[in-house]
Amino acid sequence: MSDPLQNRLAPAFAAVFLVSLLRSASDLLVPLTAVAQGVGPATIGAMMSAAFLLPVLLAVPLGRYLHRWPPPVFIGIAGLSFIAAGSSMSIVGGVALMFGFQLLTGIAHLLGLLTLQNYVASGSQPASRARQFGWFSTFQSVGQFAGPLTAGLAFEILPGSPSFVLVTLVGLLLIPVGMFLKVDAEGKVIGVEPSDHDINKGKLCPKGVTAYQQVNHPDRLLHPLIRDRRGADLHRASWDEALDRVASEIRRRRRRVRRRRP
Picture 1 (cartoon, rainbow, N blue to C red):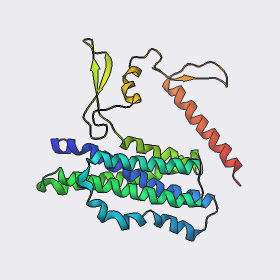
Picture 2 (cartoon, helix red, strand yellow):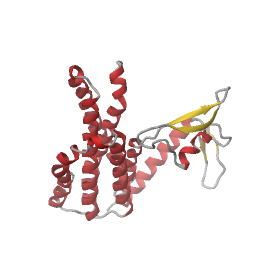
Picture 3 (cartoon, rainbow, N blue to C red):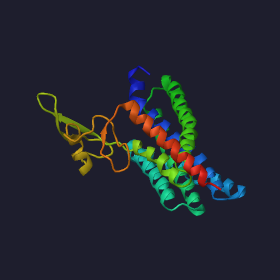
Picture 4 (cartoon, rainbow, N blue to C red):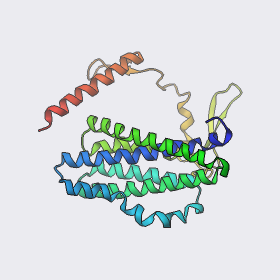
C-alpha cells in the first residue's frame, strides 16, 4: 500500500485486523473454557450462537447512526467493550457470564466492522472502492487467522477464565488519542500538547499529560534486568538471556498446570 489513499486508510485496515482477531479469539476461548468447566455440547452451541443475536437485531438500526459521531468514537467503544467483557470473565467467570461475554463481544464486533466499512466506503473513490474492500477483506482474514492462535497460546499460559483478559487487552489498541510532542532546540522532548483528535477533543488525561516524562526519565529501563533467584537483586542481562528466561518460566508453569489437571 504505497499510494496516498491507501496510506490514509492504513489505520482503518489495522483496526479491521484487531477487531477480527478479538472476535475469532473469543470464538475459541469460550468453548475451551466451557469444556474445561464441564458444560454440555448443547449449551456450548447456544453460547456460540449468542454472539450473533444482537447483530441480527441491531445491524440495520446501528447503521443509521454511524454518521452522527466520528469513526474513532465507535471504534473506541468497541475496544472498551472487548476489554470490559474480557475483564469480567477473568474476575467472575461462570456459564452465565460466558453468555454475557458473547453478547457484548458480538455487538462490539458488529460496531467495529460497520464503522470501518463505512469509513473505507466513504473515504475511497468509486473506481478504487473494490480494491480497498479487497484490502479490507485481507486484513479481516489475517485477524481471523491470528485470533485462534492467540487464544490457544493464552489458554495454555493461563487456562480458563484468566486467559480472556490476556486476549481482550488487545482492545486497548483500538482506543487512540492525539497529542503533539514539544521539543527544545536540541530535540529533547519537554512536554505534550493535545490535538483536536476525534477521541480526546483537545484534552488529555493525567496519564497523557505526563506521558513525555518517561522519554528522558533517569529511571527509564534501557536494557533487561533479571534476578538469579527470588529476593536477589536485579542485574543487567542481554536480550537473549532475558528472553530465554521468560521462555523457560512459561514452559515450567505450563508443566505445573498440566500436572494439576485431573
